[in-house]
Amino acid sequence: MEIYVNLDRMLVKKKITLSELAGRVGLTLANLSILKTNKARAIRFSTLAALCRELQCQPGDLLEYRE
Amino acid sequence: MKVTLKLAKSLRFLCDLWLGGSLAGLAFYAFRIVWLIASPGTVFGGKGKFAGAAIWVQSNIPVLTLPGSSEVIQSPSLSTTAGELQFLTSNGRIQAVSYIDGIILTILIAGLLYVTRQFLADMIDGTPFTSANAQRLMWIGWLLLGIQIAKPIAEGLAAGWILSMIKIQSPSISPGGHLNWSGILVALFILILSAIFRRGVELEKEHSLTV
Image 1 (cartoon, rainbow over the protein chains, first blue to last red):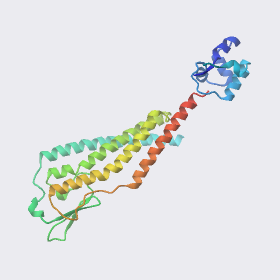
Image 2 (cartoon, rainbow over the protein chains, first blue to last red):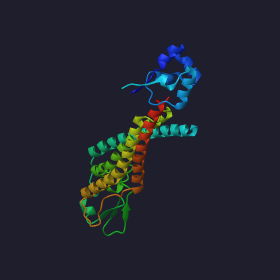
Image 3 (cartoon, chains in turn green, purple):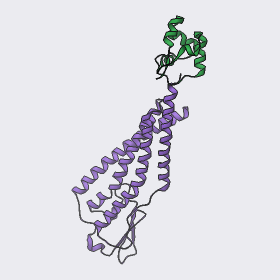
Image 4 (tube, each protein chain N blue to C red):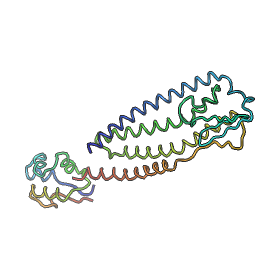
């Protein structure tokens, strides 16, 4: 996977647990775990928007491209 | 969806029943063949009696006419149950051969039923779009195609074999069956559907990993 989701880093930064975030963005814990462990194949704009809203960040803070 | 689920459950039950019947049928064939070969009996009427009689196979139905008699003896298709070749009977070998097509078809149909059953079981569990199911659908298509092609061949084979055993030559003898084109069309359609299904499996995988 070339695109990495830095969700765990953001969680530490904002001092919020994964299950709490899941509740706030309206995702299941299982789905959010897929995202956190970089197993996801795609992310919906609505999901990304909800994450940015709740974590008060930009998409660039969450996603990272690695060679 | 609820109706579909119920339908799938009923179909699975039917498949189970039919599969049991097929297996019982195979056991019956095996038993009959052993029994028939063990007790050959007298050849059907002997060659003398039927010399000059004409036998021909008309759409898989052997028809026997006796010389000097307007009587026409007809037997049902060679493909199904026991005792249908009664007019040829008392020869165990001839009867045993008449079971060949039944055995071939029963094995193919049992395979088809088993695969269909597994497919339905997955569907009932709520996970129809698996690669195993795509593979199963492909098998269903191939087995259906195999049955459609094997049926006339097996029937022709059995009819031809029986005719050669009776040793009555007649220009009108033509063992052989007919292809069921609509059945073949359905089988090909299912094969195409299985390819579409495989695409569905890919989409499902993609979908389940989209957050």
